[in-house]
Length: 67
Image 1: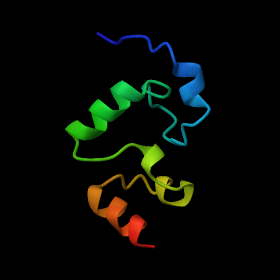
Image 2: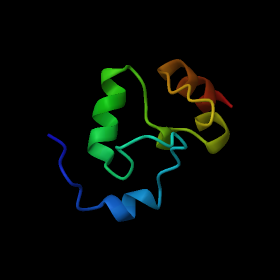
Image 3: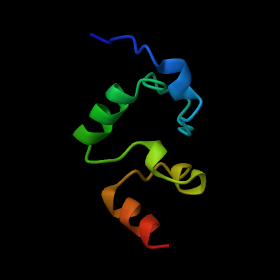
Image 4: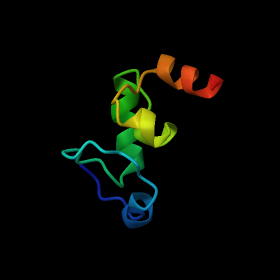
């Protein structure tokens, strides 16, 4: 069951996810759970140019930190 997030409007202002059909936008708790189940990090952990590649892997995150 999907829960409504009380902070969704404020969260959306900081969400850089470009995946248009994502139904978790603005609901950070569900977004984190989803990506964690898939051994990934959500878009907000990446700069915009990396986020657009949809490579949300831990490896890509580490590469991004090294730059």
